[in-house]
Image: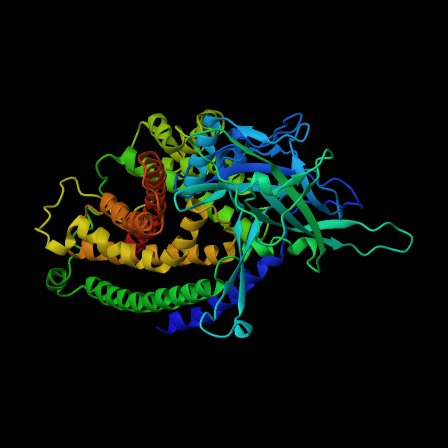
Length: 614
């Protein structure tokens, strides 16, 4: 208990330091200085929908196109995120206003959508698709103004401003479909302080859009591609009838405003959309609960073990003491190699590979070096680190395989990086597989782990176990604490993945990861101690499976999130969701199972080294 309370202030201090890392900015991303009337390029990224979970290219819909379409060369992370960054015909000049401009208008004629195009646009609007644009690598956001005091006077209402990423392609009303065909861009700039006699430079610090739907008849255009917007609420929205051709104008306007926000803080608007107070509550709750239980469990286990070891090391009445407790009785079988040692060591090697990758990625991201402004950097770093961490996974798997009396190390090395074969085949053959073989070779050549007791030639008979020692019951019991320490953070991670939100609270995530490691380790030690006291020495596979029990709860939570938070009803999006969820659950099981296994292995070696064995 005292140990837990000693840890608490240090944990809170670490948390406060992590929360301050938001001021860091990613190295290598330099600001772009614009002069008056310099072009500010508007690019399109993709179309997204939380209903279908299918990413669409911008020009998969009949938007206005520039004279030459140019796609940006994406890195690996952008490809995996589904980004297809492409230029658009929007003409935006720094600090230059545009009241209304018509896109792709030839001889003042409106755009005609064919029946097929109209049906496609109507389908995408009904599927609740969002359009994502960027200006100076800053994503567009739609401002939402919410009022917290609904019942009070209008003057007393408090306005709560929130932003959602991108803008809605359109909306439906009374079974009619309407397209947002006019975009009002609002760009904010920060004027840089310069010396006298120097021209002012500007930096883009915010990019907002107000989408509008304006009927063709309500827009007045001229031969210079200029237009006049209707005043007030006198206009009607632009309807899209999927059964016939539709005529409309694509228009836009540009408004500039000066802002006090500095360039290094321009992402704060996007990264503070999540409720930080909930994070604070969840983290403090997890820290208190985990370290409180850690103190209690540590005190119980240490006091019990000291008593057991003291009794075992007494020279008199040794037969009586051996009958009182059972874990010394299995000293001759506790390190007996389990069934399928190659598969076990390969899975644990993959877990070590995942653990090293996740630890480094979260730590580097916590320092602000994987900012969202560097598009795809997080995903790219994770993929390459996973490949290069194969040498550590192979080394640990090879040494453990030799400890388990294995001999076919080449075949065992091939099994370690198997989960990555399907997704990244070329990188797997070119980087991961050679590094795993290299690590496995040196790990297999190294001396095996020195077990403190010898293994008997004849296996000991295992007594009948009670119902609560069942493997599935152990999985349910062992998974509660680690999952309880992280389930609130899991909500924000799922929202970032499936609802196209930004996730950048890596300071919180790093602390949650540390809590997860601690809780998995202590639960694993408790479970293996109870198993050995029940004189069951078959702990290798059981401990690996039980330690990953929180993955079962992650799967249950994923199903709950699908039913209650998402509106997916079609088969293909559901298949995508559960397919990716299965991969996440499998990876999480490998991670937590590996953490628990090595904690239990060190614990077992430690306690058997402390007793005298005749």
